[in-house]
Structures are given as structure tokens and as C-alpha cells.
Length: 231
Image (spheres, rainbow, N blue to C red):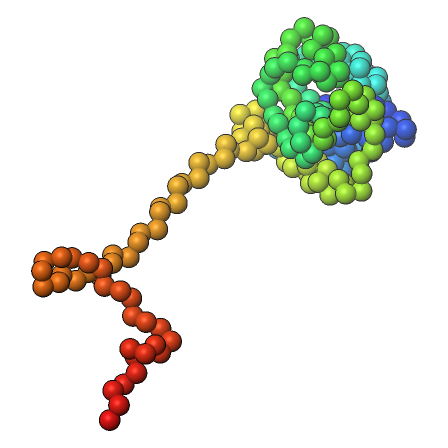
């Protein structure tokens, strides 16, 4: 059994906000035809999904973001699972809009849902997938993450949610390293230096006194020297 937790805040007030992009990924996954409906349990909405014969729990905590660990910890304890069976999907305002970043473990990076999960589990050794929601101005982080995406941002967000769901599938089937390769992408390849254009060798002639000098290019446009001799 595996657990995929999408972070967010419950209620229509927060639907469509930047902080709820983890919920959006969970909803995307739960729309699969072989996934059941969300049912409330362990202070979370939980949907059971069958992937390649394995049961996957798609989870949306109902505790509000700052207390997400209170839903995650009892769930893992009940099913006797370890943090190695867990993937958490969250927003990240330190990443550009639509950028994905997967990690096998690490700090919460200031994301309060991840912070509380780390506190409840007593470890940061669990996989996480962050979705960039754009970057706020100085001192605007709280209002920014609770704001809705602008119309011009929605296409990028929808694309990021679909790609994040694809990365989750890779994690389920092939593990976190493969998920990181899919989500993070390879480092940009070094661009080869363009060769400098070669100059055409100049034609030269040697005068009677042994001096070498370039041959002047032929005149264009019918100068006096180009006229045929008069009969």
C-alpha cells in the first residue's frame, strides 16, 4: 500500500487558491476510473485507488494546512506503513509558476503543511513533490498563497497539475529516483560553442620586383575600366 497526500485547506473559501494546488493534484488522481470516491476518515478525505494491483490511498487532509500531520500520522499508524510509503504533494512559492520539484527527503522549506507532517512523523525522510505557484513580493507570502490564480496563469497551473499527477504515477511504479528524473528534468545541456566563420583566403599576386600583394576585387557596376575598347 502507498499513500499520496495532497495538501490544502478544506472548504469552498480556499478552493482554487495557490495553497490548494496539492488538493488539485489529488482530485486529478481521484478522477481516474479505477479510483473510488473520497470518504472522511482520520481527519481527511481518503479515496482508494488501484494501480497495478496495489492499493493507493489518495488523501486530502481536513485539518487545515498547518495541522496536516494530524491526518497523516494516524493513517500511517493504522495501516502500519512507514514514511517510505508516503508521497506528499504541496505548493511552493519559491518555485516559478508551474515548475515541479521532487525530493526523496529534506527540510520543509517554510511550507507549514510539510513542517507539521515532519513534526508528527519525527523525520523528514519521506518523499515530497512541490508545485511552483509563483513568487510573492516581500512580506506578501500569506496573502499570496491564499489568493486565487489569475486568468493568465490558469493554463500553466492546469498543465503543472497534470504533469505532477504523471510524476506521482512514476513514483508509484518506479520509485522516487525515477519520479525525480521525470519531475525535475535533466540539467540543461551545455551549449556547444559555435565555430568562428573562416575568412576566405585572399587572392595574391607577386610583382616583378618580388613583392606580394592582394589582388583587388573585380569592380561591379560598369566602371570606366570595364568598357570594351572602342572600334
